[in-house]
Structures are given as C-alpha cells and as structure tokens.
Length: 89
Image 1 (cartoon, rainbow, N blue to C red):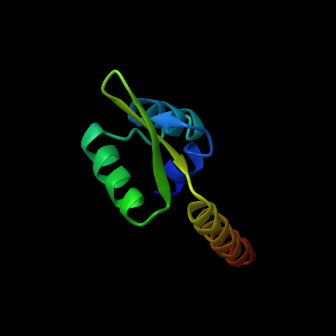
Image 2 (image 1 turned 90 degrees about the vertical axis):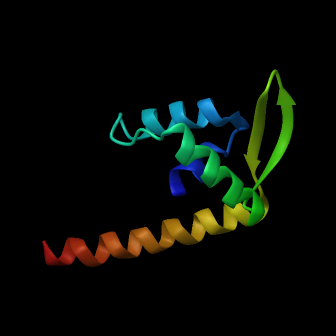
Image 3 (image 1 turned 30 degrees about the horizontal axis):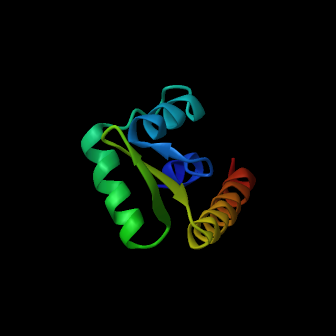
C-alpha cells in the first residue's frame, strides 16, 4: 500500500503503478494485477486516492490530500522503526 501511494504522487493507471513500484524497489516487489486492482479499490474507498480519468479501458488515479497525510505518517513511523533498530544492530 505504501509503495502504491508513493507511486500515485503522479497520475498513473494500474500498469504504470506496477512499473513504478518495481523500479522503486529495484524489482524486489512485483505487484500482480489481482493485488493491484483489489488494493486500488480499497484505497479509493478509504479516500486515499481518487480516479482522475479513463482512457482506452485504463483508469487513472492520483493520491488525495488524505492519502498524502497517511503517507507522511507512515514515513514517520518507518523512520522511527529504523532508528530503533539501528541502535540494536
């Protein structure tokens, strides 16, 4: 979810999100079509993203202000986890 929200800082359709996440993670995370479209539905229902347009059977999305807030909160949470683990290792 976090990578999908980050990918949607720019308007993208499902395939574009999959490509962006793959590039961001250097291929470590490869999202399948079923996963991406199910998650897009959940993110849209939660109002973290919104549909912007449809073009040749492709639906485009972008992150909302609420989604940006969630992304920022998750970033802070992950930084805290990293900081805590860094002291242990």
